[in-house]
Length: 160
Image 1 (cartoon, rainbow, N blue to C red):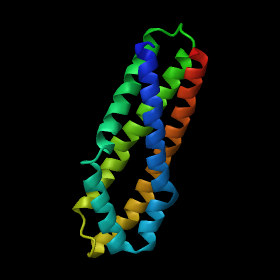
Image 2 (cartoon, rainbow, N blue to C red; image 1 turned 90 degrees about the horizontal axis):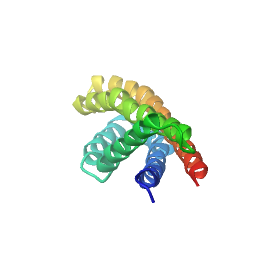
Image 3 (spheres, rainbow, N blue to C red; image 1 turned 45 degrees about the vertical axis):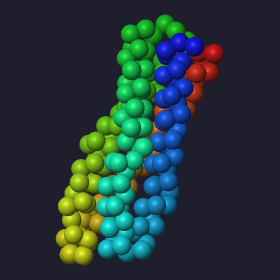
């Protein structure tokens, strides 16, 4: 098994896990938090955002991004092997659609939410803004991870 194969397997499994995490938030977690009402939902999301950065999620978040970036560079440097185009497409989709979207879209919203007081009028406005924008960006991450996984599987199949 080559380095590319090992990275591809790690990246596929990681991307699948990340797709599941983001899907969970898009499919029901955020709606559940909104249904229980702003103060409780907002406090719960603030807690999730604080806990997640001290959980196994963060090493997987960065490790999968690094592996996908390495695969993209390797594919760019040598497009001749079977599956190289799928490898590049899947890896780039993940890095841009998951990592860049998270850093540019979701993290600033998380930081703004963390700074808001859930019991205040400003908290109400923040929660509404957060729900519409954060969830939209999360949908992008969910689709990007799912598409990336499909493209990486195509790379694996073509390499076999």
